[in-house]
Length: 140
Image (spheres, rainbow, N blue to C red):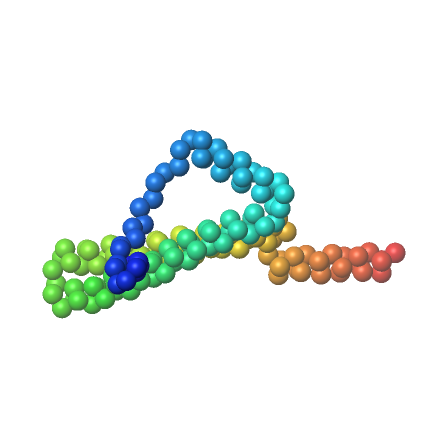
């Protein structure tokens, strides 16, 4: 609720209207120009938007799984088959949602690192290369 004037309130709705074709073309043009002018900034902004979504799915999945576990404990007291099946399905869907959120979060981190892979793997490859150079130098 927002206040307007002397004590009057008005509810602000979160209705979203889809963009027209012309507006979509303009938005695509702006995005393309942004990627051309500053690709690092554009990737950073895009990854933060995806990160929020995957983190939200992870939290929702964990919550749904915990709710399913609680429902399963209630089922042990009631022994109604449908309630047990519903509890299991809550746990399964929560685990799936959390797994997908975690997986996407990992993919986003890997994409931010770039094609070189994770930093530990890169350090290992660098050290391995140094050892190989030393061995070649010692054998010569």
